[in-house]
Image (tube, rainbow, N blue to C red; front, side, top):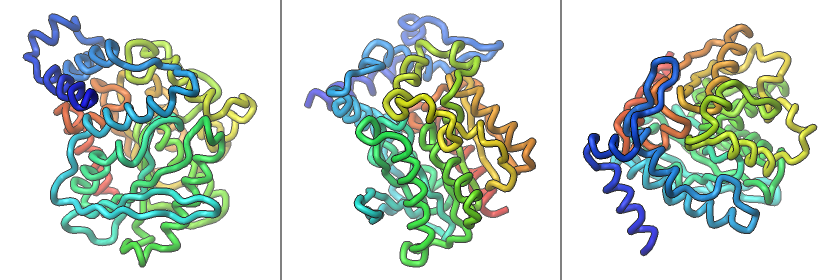
Length: 344
Protein backbone atom coordinates (compact mmCIF):
# COMPACT_ATOMS: atom_id res chain seq x y z
CA UNK A 1 0.00 0.00 0.00
CA UNK A 2 2.76 2.46 0.99
CA UNK A 3 4.71 1.79 -2.21
CA UNK A 4 1.60 2.25 -4.35
CA UNK A 5 0.88 5.59 -2.68
CA UNK A 6 4.47 6.71 -3.14
CA UNK A 7 4.46 5.86 -6.85
CA UNK A 8 1.11 7.62 -7.25
CA UNK A 9 2.64 10.68 -5.58
CA UNK A 10 5.66 10.52 -7.90
CA UNK A 11 3.36 10.27 -10.91
CA UNK A 12 1.51 13.35 -9.72
CA UNK A 13 4.71 15.30 -9.11
CA UNK A 14 5.95 14.48 -12.62
CA UNK A 15 2.77 16.06 -14.02
CA UNK A 16 3.13 19.37 -12.18
CA UNK A 17 3.23 22.42 -14.47
CA UNK A 18 6.77 23.21 -15.73
CA UNK A 19 6.68 26.61 -14.01
CA UNK A 20 6.14 24.99 -10.61
CA UNK A 21 8.80 22.35 -11.31
CA UNK A 22 11.34 25.04 -12.18
CA UNK A 23 10.44 27.15 -9.12
CA UNK A 24 11.02 24.18 -6.81
CA UNK A 25 14.07 22.65 -8.47
CA UNK A 26 15.80 25.67 -9.97
CA UNK A 27 17.17 25.86 -13.51
CA UNK A 28 18.43 22.69 -15.19
CA UNK A 29 22.12 21.86 -15.09
CA UNK A 30 24.17 22.82 -18.12
CA UNK A 31 27.33 21.42 -19.68
CA UNK A 32 29.18 23.09 -22.51
CA UNK A 33 26.11 25.17 -23.32
CA UNK A 34 23.72 22.20 -23.33
CA UNK A 35 20.94 22.10 -20.72
CA UNK A 36 19.66 18.93 -19.12
CA UNK A 37 16.16 18.09 -20.32
CA UNK A 38 13.80 19.93 -17.89
CA UNK A 39 11.78 16.82 -17.03
CA UNK A 40 14.97 14.83 -16.38
CA UNK A 41 16.14 17.70 -14.17
CA UNK A 42 12.86 17.57 -12.23
CA UNK A 43 13.07 13.79 -11.82
CA UNK A 44 16.70 14.10 -10.70
CA UNK A 45 15.64 16.70 -8.16
CA UNK A 46 12.89 14.44 -6.81
CA UNK A 47 15.28 11.47 -6.65
CA UNK A 48 17.80 13.52 -4.67
CA UNK A 49 15.09 14.14 -2.06
CA UNK A 50 13.78 10.59 -1.75
CA UNK A 51 16.52 8.29 -3.07
CA UNK A 52 17.90 5.60 -0.75
CA UNK A 53 21.49 5.62 0.51
CA UNK A 54 24.03 5.44 -2.33
CA UNK A 55 26.14 2.94 -0.40
CA UNK A 56 23.87 0.76 1.75
CA UNK A 57 25.29 -1.85 4.12
CA UNK A 58 24.95 -5.47 2.94
CA UNK A 59 21.83 -6.24 4.96
CA UNK A 60 19.94 -3.38 3.23
CA UNK A 61 20.79 -4.41 -0.34
CA UNK A 62 17.79 -6.78 -0.78
CA UNK A 63 15.39 -4.00 0.23
CA UNK A 64 17.07 -1.54 -2.12
CA UNK A 65 16.85 -4.06 -4.94
CA UNK A 66 13.12 -4.34 -4.31
CA UNK A 67 12.66 -0.57 -4.38
CA UNK A 68 14.84 -0.28 -7.50
CA UNK A 69 12.71 -2.88 -9.29
CA UNK A 70 9.43 -1.15 -8.43
CA UNK A 71 10.71 2.30 -9.42
CA UNK A 72 12.21 0.98 -12.67
CA UNK A 73 8.99 -0.76 -13.67
CA UNK A 74 6.99 2.40 -12.92
CA UNK A 75 9.27 4.74 -14.86
CA UNK A 76 9.64 2.46 -17.88
CA UNK A 77 5.87 2.25 -18.16
CA UNK A 78 3.57 -0.58 -19.19
CA UNK A 79 4.54 -2.84 -22.06
CA UNK A 80 2.83 -2.28 -25.44
CA UNK A 81 -0.23 -4.49 -25.82
CA UNK A 82 0.96 -5.62 -29.25
CA UNK A 83 3.98 -7.39 -27.74
CA UNK A 84 3.52 -11.00 -26.56
CA UNK A 85 5.62 -12.17 -23.60
CA UNK A 86 6.77 -15.66 -22.67
CA UNK A 87 8.35 -16.64 -19.33
CA UNK A 88 11.17 -19.14 -19.75
CA UNK A 89 14.31 -20.37 -17.98
CA UNK A 90 17.88 -20.92 -19.11
CA UNK A 91 19.20 -24.17 -17.57
CA UNK A 92 22.94 -23.84 -16.91
CA UNK A 93 25.27 -25.98 -14.85
CA UNK A 94 24.19 -25.87 -11.18
CA UNK A 95 21.99 -22.81 -11.76
CA UNK A 96 18.95 -21.61 -13.67
CA UNK A 97 18.44 -18.09 -15.02
CA UNK A 98 15.06 -16.44 -15.52
CA UNK A 99 14.30 -15.29 -19.05
CA UNK A 100 11.54 -13.32 -20.75
CA UNK A 101 10.95 -13.43 -24.50
CA UNK A 102 9.22 -10.42 -26.07
CA UNK A 103 7.71 -11.02 -29.50
CA UNK A 104 6.32 -8.11 -31.51
CA UNK A 105 3.23 -8.51 -33.64
CA UNK A 106 5.32 -9.06 -36.76
CA UNK A 107 8.70 -10.74 -36.31
CA UNK A 108 10.93 -12.56 -38.75
CA UNK A 109 13.41 -14.40 -36.55
CA UNK A 110 15.59 -11.38 -35.80
CA UNK A 111 16.36 -11.27 -32.07
CA UNK A 112 18.25 -9.29 -29.44
CA UNK A 113 19.62 -10.93 -26.29
CA UNK A 114 19.33 -8.19 -23.63
CA UNK A 115 21.09 -7.80 -20.27
CA UNK A 116 19.76 -5.32 -17.69
CA UNK A 117 21.80 -2.70 -15.86
CA UNK A 118 22.14 -2.03 -12.15
CA UNK A 119 25.86 -1.92 -11.38
CA UNK A 120 26.10 -5.74 -11.17
CA UNK A 121 24.24 -5.38 -7.83
CA UNK A 122 20.72 -4.15 -8.68
CA UNK A 123 18.28 -4.66 -11.53
CA UNK A 124 16.15 -7.48 -12.88
CA UNK A 125 14.20 -8.57 -15.91
CA UNK A 126 11.07 -7.38 -14.09
CA UNK A 127 12.26 -3.79 -13.78
CA UNK A 128 13.40 -3.82 -17.41
CA UNK A 129 10.08 -5.15 -18.70
CA UNK A 130 8.77 -1.94 -20.27
CA UNK A 131 12.11 -1.11 -21.91
CA UNK A 132 12.50 -4.54 -23.51
CA UNK A 133 8.91 -4.57 -24.74
CA UNK A 134 9.31 -1.12 -26.28
CA UNK A 135 12.53 -2.15 -28.04
CA UNK A 136 10.78 -5.25 -29.39
CA UNK A 137 7.91 -3.16 -30.75
CA UNK A 138 9.98 -0.31 -32.22
CA UNK A 139 12.89 -2.41 -33.54
CA UNK A 140 10.49 -5.08 -34.78
CA UNK A 141 12.61 -7.89 -33.37
CA UNK A 142 12.25 -10.51 -30.65
CA UNK A 143 13.93 -9.42 -27.43
CA UNK A 144 15.24 -12.06 -25.02
CA UNK A 145 15.81 -10.56 -21.58
CA UNK A 146 17.87 -12.68 -19.19
CA UNK A 147 18.77 -12.46 -15.51
CA UNK A 148 22.24 -13.08 -14.08
CA UNK A 149 23.74 -13.55 -10.65
CA UNK A 150 24.23 -10.35 -8.65
CA UNK A 151 26.90 -9.09 -6.25
CA UNK A 152 27.92 -9.10 -3.47
CA UNK A 153 26.55 -12.64 -3.14
CA UNK A 154 28.28 -13.55 -6.41
CA UNK A 155 31.58 -11.87 -7.18
CA UNK A 156 33.32 -11.28 -10.52
CA UNK A 157 33.24 -13.02 -12.93
CA UNK A 158 29.88 -14.63 -12.02
CA UNK A 159 27.71 -12.17 -13.97
CA UNK A 160 30.04 -12.34 -16.96
CA UNK A 161 29.98 -16.14 -16.93
CA UNK A 162 26.18 -16.14 -16.79
CA UNK A 163 25.92 -13.74 -19.71
CA UNK A 164 28.34 -15.73 -21.88
CA UNK A 165 26.78 -19.11 -21.08
CA UNK A 166 23.21 -17.86 -21.49
CA UNK A 167 24.05 -16.42 -24.89
CA UNK A 168 25.64 -19.72 -25.93
CA UNK A 169 22.54 -21.61 -24.72
CA UNK A 170 20.26 -19.36 -26.78
CA UNK A 171 22.41 -19.89 -29.88
CA UNK A 172 22.25 -23.66 -29.36
CA UNK A 173 18.46 -23.58 -28.87
CA UNK A 174 17.57 -20.96 -31.47
CA UNK A 175 15.18 -23.14 -33.45
CA UNK A 176 13.21 -24.18 -30.37
CA UNK A 177 12.99 -20.55 -29.24
CA UNK A 178 11.85 -19.53 -32.70
CA UNK A 179 14.67 -17.21 -33.72
CA UNK A 180 17.33 -17.11 -36.43
CA UNK A 181 20.77 -17.56 -34.84
CA UNK A 182 22.40 -15.81 -37.80
CA UNK A 183 20.32 -12.71 -37.01
CA UNK A 184 20.86 -12.68 -33.26
CA UNK A 185 22.27 -9.56 -31.62
CA UNK A 186 23.25 -8.75 -28.05
CA UNK A 187 22.72 -5.63 -25.98
CA UNK A 188 22.34 -4.12 -22.56
CA UNK A 189 22.43 -0.91 -20.57
CA UNK A 190 25.15 0.25 -18.15
CA UNK A 191 26.46 -2.92 -16.43
CA UNK A 192 24.42 -4.91 -18.95
CA UNK A 193 26.22 -3.08 -21.74
CA UNK A 194 29.51 -4.13 -20.19
CA UNK A 195 28.35 -7.75 -20.08
CA UNK A 196 27.23 -7.60 -23.71
CA UNK A 197 30.55 -6.16 -24.90
CA UNK A 198 32.39 -8.80 -22.88
CA UNK A 199 30.39 -11.66 -24.44
CA UNK A 200 31.24 -10.38 -27.93
CA UNK A 201 34.95 -9.99 -27.16
CA UNK A 202 35.18 -13.36 -25.39
CA UNK A 203 33.52 -15.17 -28.30
CA UNK A 204 35.87 -13.44 -30.74
CA UNK A 205 38.87 -14.72 -28.76
CA UNK A 206 37.38 -18.22 -28.76
CA UNK A 207 36.70 -18.10 -32.53
CA UNK A 208 32.97 -18.60 -31.94
CA UNK A 209 30.22 -17.12 -34.14
CA UNK A 210 29.59 -13.50 -33.16
CA UNK A 211 26.32 -11.61 -32.68
CA UNK A 212 25.15 -9.72 -35.75
CA UNK A 213 25.26 -6.47 -33.77
CA UNK A 214 26.06 -5.31 -30.23
CA UNK A 215 23.87 -2.57 -28.74
CA UNK A 216 25.58 -0.87 -25.79
CA UNK A 217 23.60 1.75 -23.87
CA UNK A 218 25.85 4.00 -21.73
CA UNK A 219 28.09 0.98 -21.00
CA UNK A 220 30.58 0.47 -18.18
CA UNK A 221 33.92 0.24 -20.01
CA UNK A 222 36.72 0.77 -17.47
CA UNK A 223 36.82 -0.24 -13.80
CA UNK A 224 40.42 0.90 -13.29
CA UNK A 225 40.15 4.68 -13.55
CA UNK A 226 37.61 7.48 -13.52
CA UNK A 227 37.22 9.64 -16.61
CA UNK A 228 36.61 13.39 -16.52
CA UNK A 229 32.84 12.84 -16.61
CA UNK A 230 33.03 11.22 -13.17
CA UNK A 231 34.02 14.58 -11.71
CA UNK A 232 31.63 16.62 -13.85
CA UNK A 233 28.50 14.59 -13.04
CA UNK A 234 29.51 12.73 -9.90
CA UNK A 235 26.93 14.40 -7.65
CA UNK A 236 23.23 15.14 -8.02
CA UNK A 237 22.86 12.45 -10.66
CA UNK A 238 21.02 9.14 -10.91
CA UNK A 239 24.40 7.43 -11.02
CA UNK A 240 26.84 9.22 -8.72
CA UNK A 241 30.58 8.84 -8.49
CA UNK A 242 30.16 7.46 -4.98
CA UNK A 243 27.57 4.92 -6.15
CA UNK A 244 29.73 3.72 -9.03
CA UNK A 245 32.69 3.15 -6.71
CA UNK A 246 30.41 1.20 -4.39
CA UNK A 247 29.17 -0.99 -7.24
CA UNK A 248 32.73 -1.94 -8.16
CA UNK A 249 33.56 -2.65 -4.51
CA UNK A 250 30.61 -5.05 -4.30
CA UNK A 251 31.33 -6.93 -7.54
CA UNK A 252 35.13 -6.76 -7.77
CA UNK A 253 36.57 -6.12 -4.30
CA UNK A 254 39.95 -7.42 -5.51
CA UNK A 255 41.32 -4.37 -7.32
CA UNK A 256 43.88 -6.41 -9.23
CA UNK A 257 41.01 -8.14 -11.06
CA UNK A 258 39.69 -4.85 -12.42
CA UNK A 259 42.23 -4.84 -15.23
CA UNK A 260 40.56 -7.93 -16.70
CA UNK A 261 39.16 -6.93 -20.14
CA UNK A 262 35.89 -8.64 -19.28
CA UNK A 263 35.14 -5.78 -16.88
CA UNK A 264 37.47 -3.13 -18.37
CA UNK A 265 36.87 -3.62 -22.08
CA UNK A 266 38.91 -0.49 -22.83
CA UNK A 267 42.00 -2.40 -21.67
CA UNK A 268 41.58 -5.09 -24.33
CA UNK A 269 44.71 -4.76 -26.52
CA UNK A 270 43.01 -5.83 -29.73
CA UNK A 271 39.36 -5.17 -30.55
CA UNK A 272 39.51 -5.78 -34.27
CA UNK A 273 36.94 -8.21 -35.57
CA UNK A 274 34.25 -7.75 -32.91
CA UNK A 275 30.61 -7.31 -33.94
CA UNK A 276 29.38 -4.03 -35.44
CA UNK A 277 28.23 -1.78 -32.63
CA UNK A 278 25.43 0.61 -31.78
CA UNK A 279 26.57 2.70 -28.82
CA UNK A 280 24.38 5.27 -27.06
CA UNK A 281 25.77 7.77 -24.56
CA UNK A 282 24.16 10.47 -22.41
CA UNK A 283 25.55 13.95 -21.82
CA UNK A 284 24.93 14.11 -18.07
CA UNK A 285 26.43 10.77 -17.09
CA UNK A 286 29.51 9.71 -15.15
CA UNK A 287 30.01 6.97 -17.77
CA UNK A 288 29.79 9.36 -20.72
CA UNK A 289 33.50 9.65 -21.45
CA UNK A 290 34.28 5.94 -21.29
CA UNK A 291 31.37 5.18 -23.62
CA UNK A 292 32.75 7.71 -26.08
CA UNK A 293 36.26 6.32 -25.59
CA UNK A 294 35.04 2.81 -26.40
CA UNK A 295 33.32 4.11 -29.51
CA UNK A 296 36.62 5.63 -30.65
CA UNK A 297 38.58 2.46 -29.83
CA UNK A 298 36.23 0.38 -31.98
CA UNK A 299 36.41 2.86 -34.83
CA UNK A 300 40.22 2.89 -34.81
CA UNK A 301 40.12 -0.94 -34.72
CA UNK A 302 38.17 -0.97 -37.97
CA UNK A 303 34.81 -1.91 -36.42
CA UNK A 304 31.64 -0.38 -37.82
CA UNK A 305 30.07 1.81 -35.12
CA UNK A 306 26.88 3.85 -34.98
CA UNK A 307 27.23 6.30 -32.09
CA UNK A 308 24.11 8.07 -30.84
CA UNK A 309 24.85 10.78 -28.28
CA UNK A 310 22.03 12.40 -26.31
CA UNK A 311 23.63 15.49 -24.75
CA UNK A 312 20.48 16.55 -22.87
CA UNK A 313 19.84 13.23 -21.10
CA UNK A 314 21.18 11.43 -18.02
CA UNK A 315 22.42 7.97 -17.19
CA UNK A 316 19.43 5.65 -16.98
CA UNK A 317 17.28 7.78 -19.29
CA UNK A 318 16.06 4.89 -21.41
CA UNK A 319 14.46 3.44 -18.27
CA UNK A 320 12.28 6.56 -18.00
CA UNK A 321 10.66 6.15 -21.42
CA UNK A 322 7.27 5.41 -19.92
CA UNK A 323 7.10 8.78 -18.14
CA UNK A 324 9.40 11.30 -19.86
CA UNK A 325 8.84 12.17 -23.54
CA UNK A 326 12.50 12.99 -24.23
CA UNK A 327 13.51 9.56 -22.94
CA UNK A 328 10.86 7.84 -25.06
CA UNK A 329 12.04 9.68 -28.18
CA UNK A 330 15.65 8.68 -27.48
CA UNK A 331 14.82 5.01 -26.91
CA UNK A 332 12.71 4.94 -30.06
CA UNK A 333 15.60 6.39 -32.05
CA UNK A 334 17.95 3.74 -30.67
CA UNK A 335 15.41 1.02 -31.47
CA UNK A 336 14.94 2.25 -35.04
CA UNK A 337 18.70 2.34 -35.55
CA UNK A 338 18.93 -1.21 -34.24
CA UNK A 339 16.23 -2.26 -36.71
CA UNK A 340 18.20 -0.64 -39.54
CA UNK A 341 21.40 -2.46 -38.52
CA UNK A 342 19.59 -5.79 -38.42
CA UNK A 343 18.27 -5.30 -41.92
CA UNK A 344 21.48 -3.84 -43.40
